[in-house]
Image (cartoon, rainbow, N blue to C red; front, side):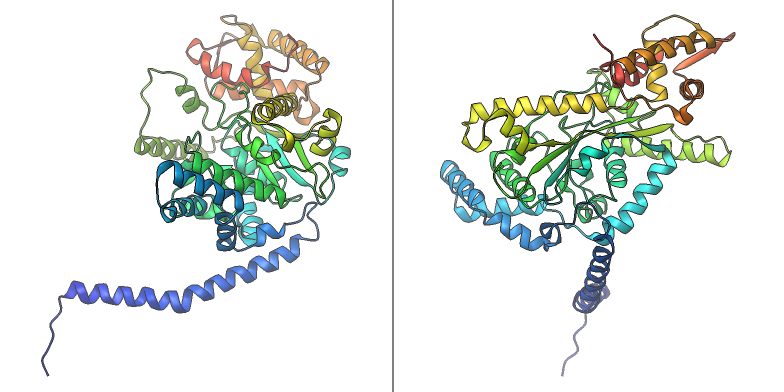
Length: 469
């Protein structure tokens, strides 16, 4: 019998492949069973205190949801039409749709959501901010039927919005929300999917992709999955509210049956921060001539920022980034809305439906805008923005802020006053602006730094719309 000689690298490769196969057969199923058993246990624990229960749709295995989406009648019709238009084999089109479905459909896991995700969200939020819930329409929230599909509609100030919203409503429901392609990196995308989020391609013009996304959102809405909706679509670059993009809203309501068993309820939610982590990056996007950092540079800037904050903490000079506040407004029932308006989205042609969706989107954004919390930094920033080049004494500044608070309260704005002490709120806002060099102090007088005018305006813009015209 002859001897076969193999190179060492081939033996090592074969050993590694054999080990992977062994792990796949023995270890991976055990790990999956362990995770699923923990998830089931967590579901049993949280079911007793959640105001909106976890829907069966969310507990369905991901592959089953993918198959259900693939063979949905409307998706199949879109596939047939696309194959005819592009003169492509149907199998090729279905393979393309399968890729879209795998990209979109989440893999909700109660253990990761309520144990890992909630713990991380709480730690991150409370480490960076003094988190507060301001105004809440408790009576309106209590009237929502447990069977209704609830959608939290909110402004989009920061990527912290995802963490903050999920953390603050964790005692009510498990949120499902859309996440952009920026988060599709390993291992972040696996964690995000397990939290129930689904990935979307912002501003995609691929009609086939949009039909698949539409049906997933429609299926989740019909199944009663609690969702978070950011009508602005992306982060506000100048701090002001943006006009709503209506795609996801249209997908949610176009098939809504006002006489069906399940109502669709939109809860407006306003978010604001004394400091958003991305403020300078967002403002950079407004400058057409500014050089955009690449991925490596952006990652390096993030690490440098984290290192700087760490060095401040090591010297006991680090301070949290002020307050982060959320207000919960009066729910809007689609069943009641359609009855009062006397129409049905399902019976409208495309142009009529788009006009009605635009009206609804404008109304929801108006409600969200009125709920945006007035915090110390935006409050002080608005005073300095209204007095460009003017130096104010501390007494003059406090007088100006007091007058601004009176105007905002008269307009119905929701103002968060830390410790219920206006003097402390003004001092806290001014201190943060001094630390960030947005305001400079000379001889007891305070003035906005002209070089930081754009950043100052960014925070002032977050509440400027609350003032009467």
